[in-house]
Amino acid sequence: MSADFRGEFGYSPAGTWAAPGRINLIGEHTDYNDGFVLPIALPHQVTVTAARRDDDVLRLVSRQAGGRVELRIDDLTPGRVTGWAAYPAGVVWALRQRGHPLHGLDLLIDGDVPPGAGLSSSAALECATALAAAELYDVDLAGRDLAELARYAENEFVGMPCGVMDQAASVLCTAGHALLLDTRSMAATQVPFDPAAEDLTLLVIDTRAPHRLVDGAYAARRRSCERAAVVLGVPALRDIGSDDLDRVLAALPEPELRTRTRHVVTENDRVERFVALLRAGRIAEAGPVLTASHVSLRDDYEVTSPELDTAVEAALAAGAVGARMTGGGFGGCVIALIARQRVEQCVTEVRQAFERSGFAAPATFTAAPSDGAHRVA
Image (cartoon, rainbow, N blue to C red; front, side, top):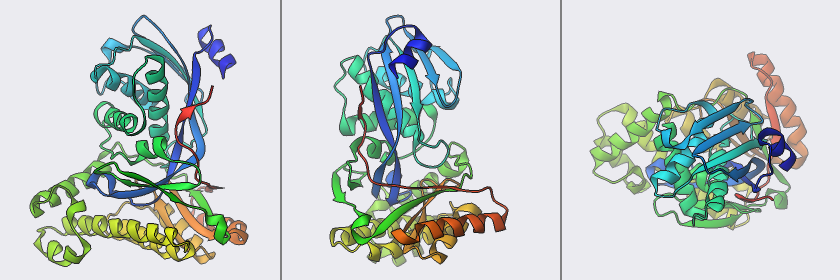
C-alpha cells in the first residue's frame, strides 16, 4: 500500500486505515424510523492510505474507479462533487463543518467491498476516510461520534437520506458478533452470532442487479414514514407497538402509509425475535424470521426486485432455513441461512433459477462476522 501511494503521489504515506462493508441480518428500513437493526461487519474492506497536506488541496485516487480527483477543500459544497469522490470529500467537508481545521489530504483508496451491491461500500469508504483524517489531524473522533459524522456527510453532502446503520456497523461491529443497535439512543449491544455452531452457513448472493438509492425511491419511502408518524402524532414509527398496529393502521388515510407503517412496526418486532433466538442458541429457528422479513419488504415496503425475489425463492427451495434481501433493496444482495453441506447445491440452484429467468449470473460468497474500522499500518 505504501509503494502504491508513493507511485501515485511521490512520497510515503502516514498510514493506512480500513473499514468494512456490512450485511444487515435483519431490521431493514427501520434505522431512519428510530428502530432496531442487527448488522454484522464483513471481512471485505475499503482501505484508505493517506497523508496530510498543508495547501488546502484534497487529492483522491481510487484503485477501483480509476483516475484522480483534485479538489480545494474551501470549495467543497453539497452537490458539487459527484460519483465515488463525493463520499470522501463529504467526510472532509463534514469535519470542517464541525469546526475541525483540515488543511489538505492525499488519499489512495482501495478495497474489495463490491460496489453497488447493497453491502455499504460507501459507508466503508466514509468511515475509513473519517478514521484516517481524524488521526492525521488529531481530532478526537471515534465510535458512535465517527459513525454519526459519516452519516451526516452522506445525508448532507452526498444527498442520500440514509439512517445511521451502515456507518455504525462499519465502526462498531466486532468479530463473532452481530450488532444490535437502537438507532434512536445509539445503544449498541454485541450479540454472539456463530452459525457454524449449528452447522449452518450465512450465504450471500449478490444478484448483480444494480443497487441505486440516491434516486427518488428510497427518499420516497422515508417521506411516507415521516408522514405517517405526523398523522399518528408520534416522533417516529418506532413508537408504534405491535399491539396497537390494527388501530393505528385504521387511522392512516392512505394505503401506502398503512403498508409502510406495517412493515416498520413488524420489522422491529422481527429484530427482537431474531435476537432472542440467537441468545437462546436456536439459530436455525430464526430462519423463518428472515423469510418473513423478505415477504414484508416485498409486499408492504415494495423494495425488492425480480432478481432478489428469485434468489430468495431458489435458496428456500434448495433447503435454506431462511432467506431475505439485505440492504436498501431495488437490487443488491440476498442472505440465506443454510446447512453447510447444502451450500454448494444452493449456489447451483440459484444460478439455474437466474439462467431460467434470463438474469445475469449472480456472485456468491459466505460471510462471517468481522471487526469494524481500524488502523492497518
